[in-house]
Length: 146
Length: 146
DNA sequence: TGAAATTAGTTGCATAACTAACTATATGCC
DNA sequence: GGCATATAGTTAGTTATGCAACTAATTTCA
Picture (cartoon, chains in turn cyan, blue, orange, green):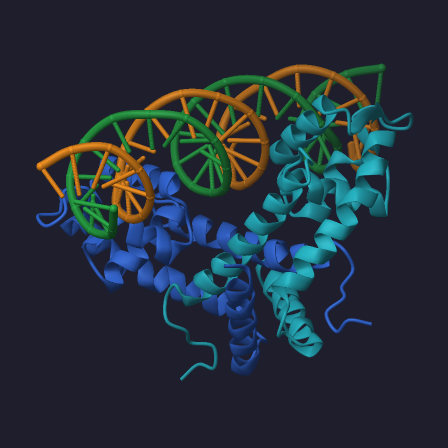
């Protein structure tokens, strides 16, 4: 019998089910209750830009695991809210570099506490080794499928 | 220092990031390549109905961790494709029981192999105890947030 | 009994997802 | 140089998600 035989649906439920939905909703709710008008998807884009500013849209696709049209529209909406700007690359005119505005830089500080607080709430009773296991499993799953 | 202090964004990336996206895409792709015209979201509803037929929409909300409008529209689309039928409950006229059609019952057999195959692909190199850890962590996270 | 509160489901609105098809720029190669 | 190919990003169409506000049926309880 194969080592990895699971009941149908079970992996899907584990990976795309209750926990991811619950965390996403809670984080969104915490943003909203603090008067922050951004979605968690927009936040996840900003998160990568805070780590490294002025990435191309393609690079944001790679880092957020989204496809190109998704990033196009997320950037559209972030631009409407004046949180990022598209800047044409000098060296390759096909490329839009997505750069943070000062407003977005302010937002970083405001969201750190909310994100940490949400994580800490979510992880009560979970030990660090188990989180490491989750990360390793998810990395392996990702590598297997891409 | 608190036991559960993580870098901001990290939990979000772990739980809503690469692995769930990759699994969802692969499963959808495998459905499509086999000529199955259903989305993974629709499939996840059917999955619960295969386990127990004729659930109310509210019960499907609980089991799939979706809100009521999401279920309303998923059922709308499943009904258009003649995979389920809404049946008014005799005992409580507010309730729609969502029941499988014969076509949906056929679909169950066709999708089992695809789901198992996708899971096995995804889980190469992952041992059972680690999957159990993931499940336990996710259950704990869900319980913490609901 | 009858008004208030609860529960099941729907509708409207905004955002986001994926696919496919498209434009524009850049690169490779003869 | 110039044509084929690849890459970056956009647009169109369908489905899905979340919230708020709504209708209809049921339950609670004074």
